[in-house]
Length: 279
Image (cartoon, rainbow, N blue to C red; front, side, top):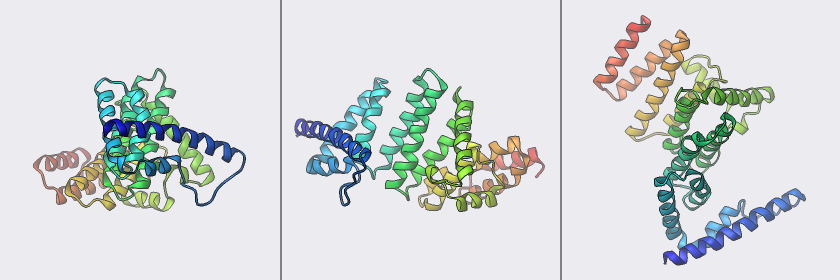
């Protein structure tokens, strides 16, 4: 059965390549067909029928092997297939986005090359993963962490380049007042400003707050709510380092987290933060 699944999947790959190329050709010539599947992937997945589950297992097995061998570039090629086969499985999107943004990016020789992979991971989560799973807090968490740690933090030597590239994207959106490409809504950005203090939206920390807040709004399970609250107060703590006006909002978020998830360690953080900032 698994051999049959591989054959079907290979045939689907070939068909998909033809469909993609054909679609580009038609689009370039101005043709469009109403009622047709929106993507080649939809046709391919539909064509797999009962083999879909087996094909998914085969691809996952291959992905695990490539992961163990550190062959991340080849693993990236499987990303599209896994997300097509299991579009409503959040772990698939998180797994692939992490490999693109963290594992593959650091193998690249220049900051510009690295940024392309980081942005690809970001887009995979934001543009595709959340489109299929708009109420999944795990994907919001992964996206918020990406802005907090990969773009906003110092864990990557190319972080300053990422920040500059992100600033360019934000400024382009500002100049046209078109935030659709970044999947951000001005009303929700204003809500972030109102809740935490006016943000510098060219700073990745603002986006970490935006997506963390979006995730918290749909999070039901305690573990998801705790993770998202942690992202929000850690982001505010980072902002407070350079701008003390965020200290009051940080305390509010720390106390809200402690109220929902009381823990001695968090109480110590609150006490220390109050003392440090005279609150």
